[in-house]
Amino acid sequence: MTAFRLAAFAASLSLLSNIAAQASSTCPEEQATPQLPTPEQVKTICEVYKDAVRTPHSFRLDVYEGKLNAYLGAMCHRNAAEGWVRDKTVRDAGPWIGTYANGAWSGQYYGTHSPVLIWYSREMVAWLKENRPDDRPPPANPAPVPDGAMMIKEMYTAPGAACRDVDPDYLLATQ
Image (tube, rainbow, N blue to C red):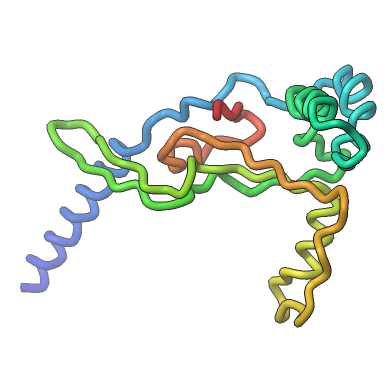
């Protein structure tokens, strides 16, 4: 009986690894080059708008939106030299229920919204470390998020697992 169970276990592992290989589709948002601001964009756009995007109350909405669009369009939120930090990988915002039939995967995504990769400004990282610590309980009365702290949510095609193994610097959000 032990040999039979061992053989069944090995067959199950083989089947599961084959299913996993079939399930891994290509990531539609993967790009051939890093999606980071160029040195020219850093000088001409990121530097010019980095303070403005952190003070939306200083502008009429249409003016602020123009500045924010330029900043995000140049990928300035992906500038590690300015202290921006990102999630390690794209993550789903809910379950994706898949079915393998006739040699192909199909499924339905039940997330609250599309899979995400979040970028955090230096100020947001400092606030999170102080008010949402990993190594101790959070403060009883957390400080308000400081003015200028930002989180940029990039959204990707479901399921997020399709992009999980891609270096996020090579992803271009389409949503």
